[in-house]
Image 1 (cartoon, helix red, strand yellow):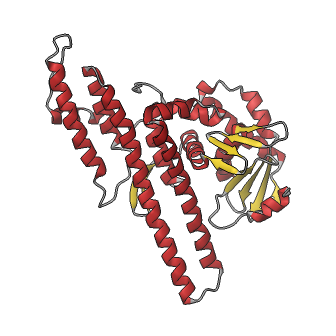
Image 2 (spheres, one colour; image 1 turned 90 degrees about the vertical axis):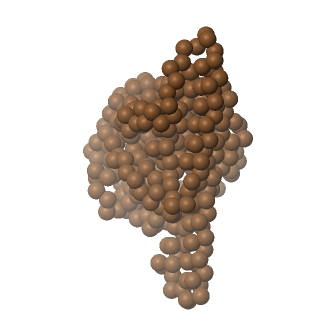
Image 3 (tube, helix red, strand yellow; image 1 turned 135 degrees about the vertical axis):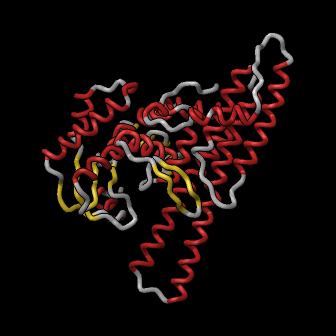
Length: 365
């Protein structure tokens, strides 16, 4: 069995020194307060949370370029932070890694079977990227990360986490907006099945697993780019090898762009097509319209991306037909509005609030 030291060395992590007890307790205080105040539905006990965090080992370390500035190793329940970052950054980054500690589900021998939304079967992990994205979205919300619009790999999109997993955070927010953030965050923290059960119910089991696989594909492809870039920066390459490496990176970037839009389109299609079939009342029509319009504030775009606009126009045409059908039903009182007036009437209530957007209300089932 590979030792902790060997595993750290394999990942390029070299411990410099432990973080002193006073600073560990300050980190524990910071994270405990955030968990209890930002996620009251978790019903966590502050003292219990503080005690568990304060017992974790924390170290300053040399870490490879391209790797996150912080990481958690479950085998020795330890956190590692990159040398040179400020203590305020260490506290902020610790939230994500400490959530990983609470996510763990181990057997009696200490073997990890589950980490939040990620399941381990032998040596294979399923849902690793989905879990990383969900934890980072939780972290961004908890520490008050400023939402921003960014462009990566030719895709422009809004994200709650401009620096860490920005693209995955955009996609998990799209999913969470449709499933409800409460069930997403609770399953992420407590490693239960509630989120994935709802995910499969709303999107269809096949689509849910495909979306999960695409998250992994995005994460692993980006990791390949980081490794190649590190090799380019640290190796004296011939022009031929440099050109080949650069072409490979560009090919991976195109794969990421395609996978992102494929995933976004699948989220859009699988949810809104299924919900359209279930509409039976005028109120449900209005909720559907608002939800689809608000979804436009979450999507990634490029100069050549037209899928969402085409989809939106198609669904509005279907909605108009349903309105027509309902207005002939004397049992339902419907105030017929023009398509444009209804659309623009929703603008004032767009999906732009902070903590309120994480409430699990008005989610069609």
